Every structure is written in structure tokens, then in C-alpha cells.
Length: 171
Image (cartoon, rainbow, N blue to C red):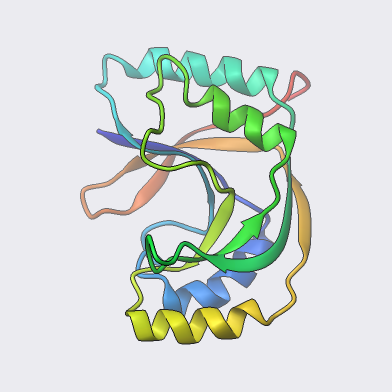
């Protein structure tokens, strides 16, 4: 089964992201706005307990994650994805690094760029127009997220929460 690990921000930030996603994100109906910590990975049902106990340990050793969104950016020319860019923060980097060590696989494909996607799978022309407009907007948002979610993918391609892990020893 396919799994992933993400942070879900506040309703306020999700609503703001969805105001763009409903128009510009082909995955709008498949998953709420989120910050991906671990891209899709496949594990068997027998392996799941090991991953869950590792996630509990990681969450216990982690601090709540501070996010600071400061602009709109894009992955162009690698992809036509548009996103809210998040400043790197020690609490966020700790989780990312911990989720790319055994038993989890490393991410060899991309470097970690903290972000929240607001548009993807756009044509080159639409991407250029939308990214150009959104990059001119001022965006500033800060918040702290105190839990991460293990997600699994359903047969229709949508994602749902399998388990939530509270961050920090006091959780």
C-alpha cells in the first residue's frame, strides 16, 4: 500500500491555499493542503508496525514545527508547480531528516524545499500567467503545527489519515 507523511496546517491557511487550489491544483479533491515530509512510499501490512513505532519515536523527539510562509514561488522549469514557500526551520528540518533514515528510504530525487502546493499540472502558458500574478502578491503567514500525519492512498487516488502523531515529549 502507498503511504506518505505530511503536516496539515491550520484551517485558516488551508482555506487560503484552497482559494487557489480549487482553480489551479489538479489534486485539489485528492488531499487537503499540506506540507509533504515524506513522498509516497510503499510498505506491506507486515512492515507497518515497525514504521508506526518509528514515527512515534520521531514525533516524541521532535518539537512542534514552526512554519513561516513568505512568498509564492514555482519549481519551473522542473515542473509547473506553484507553491507557498516556507522558510527552513530547525524543527521542520529535523522531521524531514528523521523521515529519510532507516527504516525509511532516502529521497534521492529532489532536495527538500519546504512548501505548500497551490497549483500543479498547469499548461506552460497558464503556469506563466498565474505564477507571474501570484509572485507579485505579498504573503506572510506564521504558525506552529504540533502534529504530523501518516497518510495512505485509497484506490481512487485520494489520501486519508491513517494515524496522527503529536510532536514533542509533552504531547
